[in-house]
Amino acid sequence: MNIALQAAQGLQAAHQKGMVHRDVKSANLMQTPHGQVKVINFGLAQVAGQTRITRTGYSLGTPAYMSPEQFRGETIDQRNDIWSLGVVLYEMIAGKMPSNWMVACPTASVSPGQDAVENGMLNLAAEGNRPATIS
Image (cartoon, rainbow, N blue to C red; front, side, top):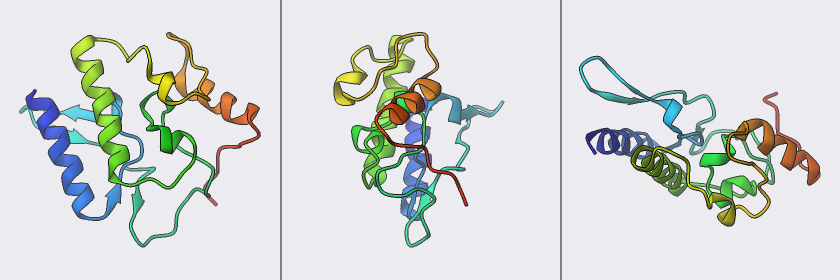
């Protein structure tokens, strides 16, 4: 649980600076040789008061870890990162992703073992949504 606590503290520090990570997942948590957990890859982070890189109705991130609000392209805040950290915690304890995460995201169509990003983007495209690009 020390890993989870340190990850939560790292997110808290980012949130106190007005940042929302938007892509919290196990691959974005790294542990140093001294046991310190680092939240990495703030490439999709949204900073309060800054220009957004996505338009309303569009989303960026890893679908399997997204909150329903983020998946639908709605406005998100720090609670999104907490949701995603909860998915990571489940993954740490169970050794697998939640099997019913699609219940919260009824538009998702990712099957176990498939690439979540690829399938999430294909699903968005099928609904007429396109991933936003940074311009």
